[in-house]
Length: 353
Image (cartoon, rainbow, N blue to C red; front, side):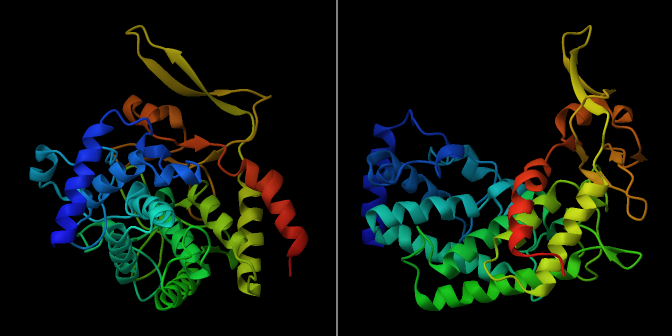
């Protein structure tokens, strides 16, 4: 405890000395190697350790370049300080700490990192999936969560640990072995949840029920559907496997074929200013528009669907209330690079069975 207290005192002094941090939180894992040995990285590491939860994880949507305020520490809203993998929670912090440890070999940061990895291993369902929050919170938060690449971010991190890839080379062999097992279980979960329609493999929902493995509701505007966004992250992970099994190869080819089949032509999103001066985004017809995809496709029909906070399924994004239409990505080009560049290179090495 004395060593930790001394480390924190030194760290808070460093935090004060670099209060106007040059590096933003969303940039902490994109710095040159020598930066992680410097004073600013140490100050941020001190802050990151202060945010670590009792379970060994971290909350989401929090700028951790600065230490937690008294207001933050006193806020008891469940989604404010709870341990989560949502929106980069926990995985971002562990990636940063790994880089910091690689540069400094700091013992306190190493203990925090080990606790974080242990948290991820404990949070995994026996089926191989991960919930959005752990310890579990009642509601859709218990579902297997592909949404916003939450589970894929965990698997990418654990795969780097298992393989000992930079900057994870310091991780103990026993932990690396457990991480490898977790990744294998996660791959099995991905294969199990790939949706079949009329006996044909397609894609994935943003979240799947942890018991039945069927597509499931999350928030009112996130219905059980096939995802034109999250499926891309899943496919990228499967394509990153060095020696994929025949089942993985089949899953990738099927997922890509589905994405190609549901591409939307002749439509683009256009931003205009309302008479009140606010920006408003609507879908407009454009024969020359590049391909786009819907975030949600109706199960069975593969029709693009759009749902607002009223939970009503609609077939035009322009029918969604302005707050959601302008505040949520219902349409995007998520698969474009995957289909144009990544998949052709991958399929040349792994032809369709």
